[in-house]
Length: 236
Image 1 (cartoon, one colour):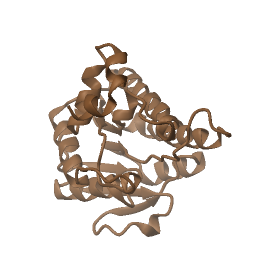
Image 2 (spheres, helix red, strand yellow):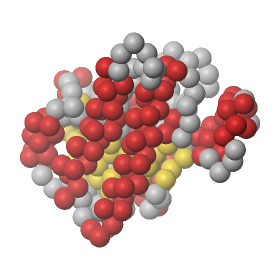
Image 3 (cartoon, rainbow, N blue to C red):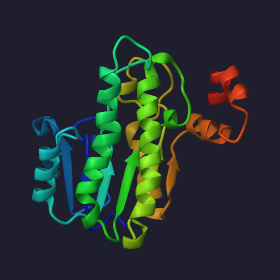
């Protein structure tokens, strides 16, 4: 899958990784980049086509699909974290996370999948797809675990039409979602460069940083060892 000359849509492109994706796609020669957001007036990337798309609104998804028409690459980047514990006083925010991170990603994928024969999908998942870190991230982690499973399932269902489906997994990028954490972070453009290199190389999964690689490797071991000292397990 080569990006040069392709028509691409990026969800959640008004900031963070989504904005970096849109900019990098243009730099790699994509002919058209649809940069989508619930509020497209906030998109300030020269050369893209701003487009309204709300992952939680089927009518918005259908309207965007009708406007875009044919498509070569779909990048499912949009997601939310509400810092919801699983056993808190309400499940409302957990449901919001699933509505965006799982159901929204699935709805957008379903809308564009028939147009992506011979094309590609890239889903932004998380290191938290594979472990739980703290109560405030548990709802988000559950939704991202579901999105990882969604990614693997969609890959199988689209194999006959030769649609490549790639997952980007990362732990710590310098985005608004991680702004409150005073720890070393990857620059969004560095994460995106890895993701697009992997997409063009035909990889099914791109692991963007060492903590994510350590988490993935730990899945074959005894979880008691991992959870006994999560910082050491993450950072070595």
